[in-house]
Image 1 (tube, rainbow, N blue to C red):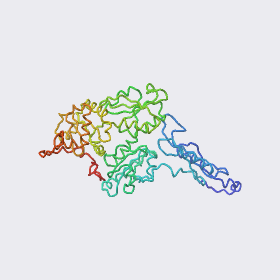
Image 2: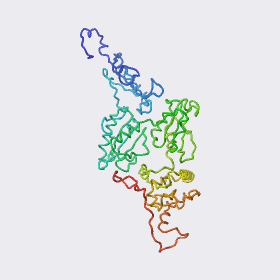
Image 3: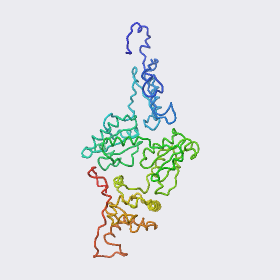
Image 4: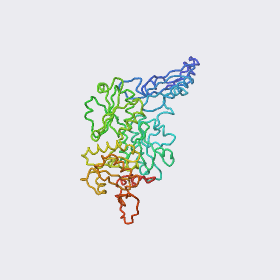
Length: 504
C-alpha cells in the first residue's frame, strides 16, 4: 500500500530523492512498536544504511523498582558511523539479563530495519522442545539466561530415553508460559557427543538434571519427580523473587529460628548492591532465606549510602552471633563466596530428601543421632566440630540426624531411641559407634576417632579386639564383622540412573 505509482509526481521529484534510502526512525521506544514500525524518513544523500540500537535496562524512563525492558532507537546512518557505533558498544553488548547493556547493528535496503534481529541476540533458539546444547553454544546460553535447566543424557541409556519426551514436553510448556526473553531455557546435552561438557560438570550418571542460575551451577541437582508438570513447577519456583522485603525492623524478630538468614539493609531497590544481592540470592536461596529492607525500614541499621548485609545463623541449634559482610558489596564473586561459606554450614542435617545428594559426595559420614527435641546436643556437637575438626571437612561429612526418623541405623549399631544422643561413623562399608557420647567434649577424642578410621584401626579392632601395646601373633582371635553401612542404600538408585561408576 506504500507503493502507489503517480507518474505526474515522479517526473517532478529530483533524482537524489528518487534514489535516497528510507529507514524507520524512533528514539528510546519501549519495544519494537509504535513509531519504530510506523515512522519513515528519507535519508540524506550520504546516508547509505539504516542503524538500529537496542538498550536493555530500567533507563531512560527509570522509576523506583522499575522492571528492566528493551528500548529501541532507529535512524539513518552511514557505514563509517555504523562501524564506529558498533565498536563503541561492543564491550557493552553482553545480553546478560541482570546487567544494563546496549547493542547496535546496521542493514542495507529501504526500510530494512523494520525487524530487529541480530545474530548475537539472546540465545534461546527454539520454540518447542529442549535446546540442544553443545560446547560451542553452552557459554552463550548460560550467559544469556537467568535460569538454565539442563538434562545431561546418553542415547544408549534407557532412563535417558524414558525421560527425554517428558523433558521436551516440559520445555514446550515453559515456552508457552510467556516468560520474558533471557529468563529461562531448558536444554539438553548428549554426553557421548559432548564429552568435554560432561567432564566440565562432573557427570557420573545418566540422566543428570542440573540447574544453572546467573551462569553458575546450583550446588544441588534436581532429584524430584520426573514429570512435565513437576519440571514446569520447578522452573516457576526458580523465577520467583528470592528476596523477601521487610517493612519494619520488628519483622526480623519473627524470623524462623531453624533457618539461616541473609539480611540486607539498603537505601533503594535500584542500588547496585541490591542487584548483586538478588543475583546471589537466586543461586543460594535453597541454602539460606534472604531478606531486604529499604529506606525508612532499614535506615537505623546503616549509614546513608552505605548498605550492609548481615548473616544470621539458625538460632535453634547455633550460638553464632550475627555477622556483617566486610567485603565489596558491588562484587558478585566476593559476596557469593561469603554467603556460600555462611549458608552451607560445616555441619549439615541429613534427611531422606537430601541423603542421595550427600552420599553421592562420596565422603564418610560422622553423624550425631539425636532426639528431635534435643537441640543442646546439636549445639555442642557443632561447636566442637567447628573448634577441633574444621580442617577435616575435605575428608568427612559432618552431619546430624533425627534419631527417630533414622531409627533403622540405630538398630544396626545395637542401639535404640532410648540411647540417644550418640555418635557414629558410616564409611559406606561399615558403621562404627563412638564409644561414649560424653567423651565428645574431651579435647581430641573425636579427632582421634577420625584418625582411627583413616588408619584402619576401627575396622581392625572390630575384628580382633583392641590393638595390643606391642605387635604379637594371636592365632586364637575370633573374627567378627562390623555392622554394614545403612546410608549407602540411600545413594543414587540403579533403578533410576545409569551409573558410570560405583560412587561408593
